Every structure is written in structure tokens, then in C-alpha cells.
Image (cartoon, rainbow, N blue to C red):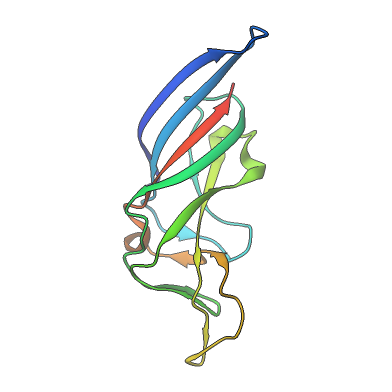
Length: 145
């Protein structure tokens, strides 16, 4: 299950007197990852206790940001021990009840056992069992209202 392990939330006031909520959230992936290797997919984290609206999210990996199992889908393969990073889904900023984060890594594509000549950039994880991503944590700094 996707959980928020810890949170530090506070409200600040800008020079014009407008309040703004800022939160530092430690989040952990812990359920089977669903994605298709493109921009869809990810795991939702419930941020509604902290925000009505989110304007900005930045992520930073903290611990356990390596896969525990081989994850494959299509022609891409993500190996056990491979480093992945959490990326916020931009279009979900205004819906904090369903704020999604995706896992991206450097893919190692293979077709019939031969390495491809292209496609070695960052790619979203395609799909994975719970064991592969369980324990991957990241810190999200979110600003909103």
C-alpha cells in the first residue's frame, strides 16, 4: 500500500499576507506498480489531509530507491538492484486526493536477448509486483493551499 510515513506541514504567510501551506512528506511505495511505459500509470498518494490544492511538488529519493526484483513489460527490462526515481504527475497537482507519483529508471531494453541500439534514457517503470517496489521511499516537498 502506498503510504505517507511521516509529514511536516506548516502554513506561511507571504509579503502580501496570503497564507500558503508547505509540506515535507516522506512517502513509500508498497503496492503493485501499474504503468504502461509512457505517461500513464503511477501510484496515488492521498494528500487531502494536507491540501485543498497543490501548486508545486518536488521529489527527492531518500532510501530503498532500488528495485528488489526484475520488472519487465514490453521490450524493456528493469533489473533487480536498479536505481529508480519518483516523479510527480503534473496534471494531478490540482487534485490532491489522487496525487500520483511514477517510478522512472534507466531501462535496459532487450529483444530476443540482443541489446537494442537506442532507448537507454529514463523511462517509466512498466509494471511490477509488490515485492519489486516495496520499501522505495522518497521525500516530496509540496506547496499549495
